[in-house]
Image (cartoon, rainbow, N blue to C red; front, side, top):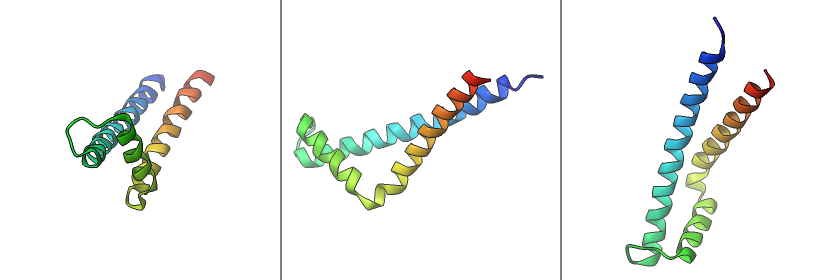
Amino acid sequence: MSDVPVALVVQGVIFLLWALLAVRILFHLRGRAKDLAGHMVPRPFEWIAATEQWLADRDEANVRRVLLLLSVVLVGLSLWGRIR
């Protein structure tokens, strides 16, 4: 039996985790931007300000690290699949 199906399942699970975390971050950023704007549809500058605040927020450091780790693992798995 080949490892290809196992590798694809692992990569799929990692991608699912990455996608869920990315969506969570986007909803969180939208909430921050909406709070900054004071209305339902934030403008681009409010999104930028919310993103800057999120990047500086120490409480969100673990979320950023996990997103980075999952991104690196996904790239590594993709490269490993190409090399094999």
